[in-house]
Image (cartoon, rainbow, N blue to C red; front, side, top):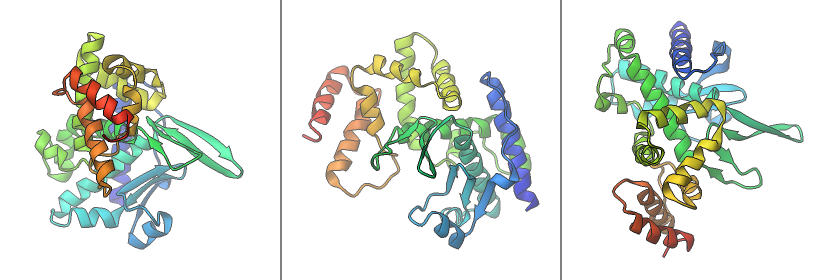
Length: 273
């Protein structure tokens, strides 16, 4: 529809400005032929075992309209449209993240996209929480930077964090990564904004050596522990896994002392004490 074409144009405009701010080359952007808004039946046919609100991939960006409808059913029509725009922006940022691919037979597999890395020999996915937090941080920053245009187009204010986080899916993950940013900034002797910009820039460039700074700030094994954290809003049924995830999160928060981290690291090395 014309409205969705306008959304795509705005995503390209806003994302292009953020890439220039980070000192990166701006691509031609995403086209309307690469964006697919799917109803319930079409989504279930394309992604039969996934109820996410969106996906990016080699074929473009896919938006699950039916899931957005169910989540924001109590919102106004304007809220619902802004949520659709936010999901499109989030998935487009994923789409333009640096990717590493490998051909196995006739199929092209993504084994790293942004910070997220798949284990092609199994079902493992590493740094998923961190990856989503970075992408949603970029999403939130763009929405905040363009709050005036958003308000003019949708009639919704995004001037405060409380207003903004209503549209972000990974706000809890951003909060956890914020703790990591503060500690890394202290370790490097720089302002936290410098670390945020470096992390956001690396999403697009694929320069993963930055992650060594997390290991330096927290100590040996920190990066492996970070890779094990699942998305914080993900429902976990297994009580042992739930306990492990709580300990992994506690390891990285600012309130945890170095002495407590030593104990947590020992417990995590033995799975769950």
